[in-house]
Image (cartoon, rainbow, N blue to C red; front, side):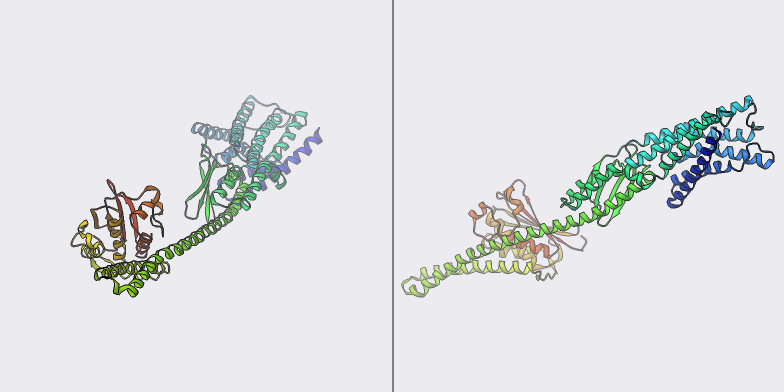
Length: 569
């Protein structure tokens, strides 16, 4: 039995010394609070077991007595330091903190104040048994607190983190039981002492697995998350063609990989693309993982950075792939949008050709007929008939000229060759000039409301094209009175044109400013090309402004032109 105890004790020295080296190395690589306390805890334990080789069991010299007491005091501190390791993740309750600190100080003081330590085979005085009882109570209480905190915190964690935390919890409990077995025996070579040494060795191996499990062990623990990760990557590289698809493919696997409470996916501007999970108690630490074109916001537990470092690395890899997938989705959406625009442009072109042919054919045919009649039958017509033909001829040429002018306006606006030349002008005077020209014989039906002193810097031609169109439409499709009102607010010139007609049907409002679009009531009420409002809005955009529509109160149509100005009211 003596040989077994000796062999296992040497194995314990090797495993706990290795544990100390691994813990210190992790601290040098990580430099975080948890790694620091792990390095101190297992470093102290490594010093204790190695010092046991040089500190005699029965010291004679003063130095030997000092080394013996220092070695025991350090061993006593190990569960306290391990408790501080768990405290680095989440602070304990204040009552427990006060009890632990007071008890640790008391036991360290008692260790240094003992008169002597009985040698092997010597009788143990009552005060030494009292010290042993306090020692074991202190050790058991702290080890139980460590084991419970780590075991309970492992719930909800991913495979690797959960098993690492529970390995440490098991190791702390096993080392406590081993200590009970060894301390209960006055003779070192009993079967119970040997069992304690074996259990201590198992505890050391469990500490190593919890602190730094080998890669092959991590791979076995990570199988579930690995499958989810592979499925997420396949979805990203396969069926995910939109940003919502990307979010749906990766957020749930991301949450499970690191045991997060929730994960949010955001684009480069910070706008939320997708969200999975919910934040609960224990998942309040926010971790942001940026990638090209966006970022991840992860609500995870405080244990994740230490126990889930590999999982966080996997998450960063998946985040980078998500960035690539989002970029691909963006390109796909752009391609789809361009395709829709091309289809729309082709439709507009077809509509344009058909409408232009129809609208031009009517006045051209009419003009041709009038000219032919005047040329061949002029001598047979009365002066009144000839004048009627001339008037009709003038109307048709005016109509054709207006259509041609609209088509030219569209081509210039599409080519961005409209020159906007702002000038200082009096708004009321300019509006009255426009209304007089546009309303012709219906000037009395239009009311202009504007401050006589209101002056702005704007392009008079742009203003004339837009307001003329709005006033003409109000008189043609609406009902009087037509109100043209101008004001300046928020460093913008606002000109509204409002009538008291039936207004625009709700179902037609989305297409109101589309080219060639006309609702059925407008077609029946008057002739037109459906280009006027499209041209008016394009002129507004050329002036860095906007043309808006809303229903008038109580009924009718209300258009508002908004043009920016740097002038202050």
